[in-house]
Every structure is written in C-alpha cells, then in structure tokens.
Image (cartoon, rainbow, N blue to C red):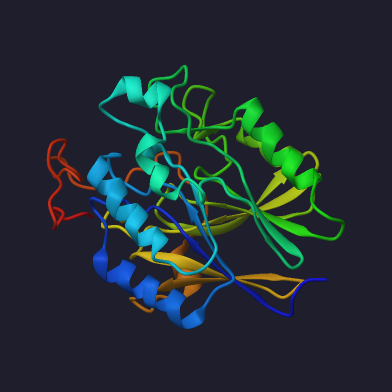
Length: 286
C-alpha cells in the first residue's frame, strides 16, 4: 500500500560552472527542513563536464542527506576529450557513482531510470536525446519487475518527445519509449533539459503518458526563473508544485509544450559559457 503522503523533489539542470548559488542554497535548505522522501536529479549537473565542475556538483549532491537518484545529461559527457567521452564517459562522476541511474523504491512508488544521453549519434547535434534499445530494455525490465500495485516515476534527462523530423528530433526513440511506458504502471516521466517546467500529457497508441519537466537551478534560464518541482503522491494522485524564489505561481512557470530548440534564448554575442573560462557571474541571459 502507498504511504499516506510521499514527498519528492525533482531537480534538474544544475549546471555547475554557471550555477545559481542563491537557488542551490535555498533548495538545500528546503531539503533540510522538508525532508523529502527522495530527490530525483534529471541531468546536466555541469556546464562543460570539467573536473572542477563535477567536483562541485558531487560535493553538493553528497551533502543532501536524503535518497538521491541522478540521471546523466548531455552536458555531463566530456566535451573536449573524445577518448574519455567514448571510453570513460563517467570517470569524472565517480564520486556519486552509487547514485547515478539508481532505482529508488518507496512504499507503493518507485523511481526508475531511463538513460537518454549518449556518447555519439548519427547526427550533428549530439546534445539531443536518444533512447537506445538497450536503455529502453533496462527500464522496461525494471518496471516489469516491480511488485504488484507499485506505481512508477520514470526519470530521464531529455523529454521523450520526437519534435521535428528524424534528423532534428529532440529525442530519437522517444515516441516508442512512451508507447511502451503507457503499457505499464507509470505515473509520469520526469525530465529536464529545456530549462522551463512543464506538465503535459502525451498521447500514444497504447494510451496517454504524463510528462513532467523541471526547470533549471542555474543562470542559463530561458523564460522562467530558477526552480524545482515539488511532487506529492497520496496513493491516488500526483500533485506538482513548481517552487521558485520569485513566487511565480505554478501554472505561470509551466510552458505549454516542449520546444524543439532547448537552448536558452540570448542575444548574439552574449556567450553563456566561454570555452576556456567560467565566470562566477554569467553575462546577461535574456
């Protein structure tokens, strides 16, 4: 049976290197005071997968005294060292290896990982998502192995939306994954990547699937201030509240659809992160 109330924090796109320290301190204090049953971090822990960025990210994550599961985002794969990217992509994240793609089992509810960030793919933009057959098999096997009556939240980095043509799709294999998830007791798919929160329902041939996206806790904002999702499960309904320091109400924080281009909008000539240095204060982001 599900617990009377399960509280989860859904955090995403922290982007250490361009992190928002005020937002991170606030979230950490919320975790200390509210004691959520678990925290799901859906990828992009760093800006450019540098060692010092991962050190900071791992230090922050290990300081959270609650169960944590972490998905790897496209920004967490080495940018400049292709040998490491292909052969040791998670070497710099070993400080939290026990939390990466970790299944969390709670009374009546499980958080199950689905990997969408890949080392390479046959299109120019490697930042976009790809659900491989192996990753989907692992996720479905975990779902099929849950005890009778247990509901699941599937955690991934990229929203499981194709959005666009085969060459420009946001997440290749997303539609197939959603159709398979619709056959199983999945409450929702949790993701990040687009830096704005959303709560939408995607129709599949096998029925609807709820998709919940978290915003960012970095300075790489798109159209909303830094935020995270507070999820409450009472055994019957899953409620989402988008928490932010600006006191913007949840519905105003949530975008209506998943954008094909998830890059933060900004003016030409205003870099979000210089390749060889990361300023403590980011240039203005529009």
